[in-house]
Amino acid sequence: MKIKEVIGIDVSKLTLDSHIHNIGIQKAFDNALEGFGAMVSWVLENSQIGKENLLFILEHTGLYSHQLIDYLVKHGYFYM
Image (cartoon, rainbow, N blue to C red; front, side):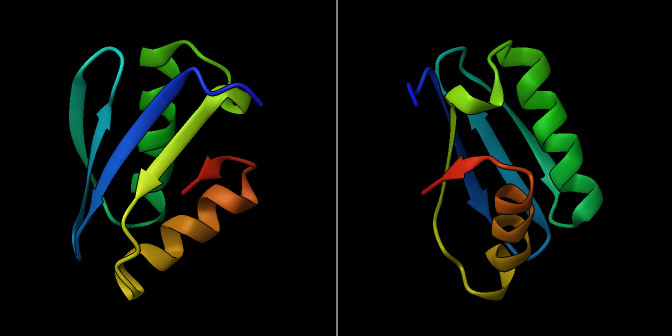
């Protein structure tokens, strides 16, 4: 695995404030299953990097981040 892009996520009860590091863009998504898919699609479209070269970084916020972590693991994304 070679990391080519880092996605920082500030997790709150209602939103995922996401930032694609190398290109410096950000967008907020709902902290729900539909929002997870929308965020990942947005990252893939804007970074144009395959999922094997992406790293999602987020702070563990207990219940607010648990479903997102499950989603990332289930879909084969790397996270810290």
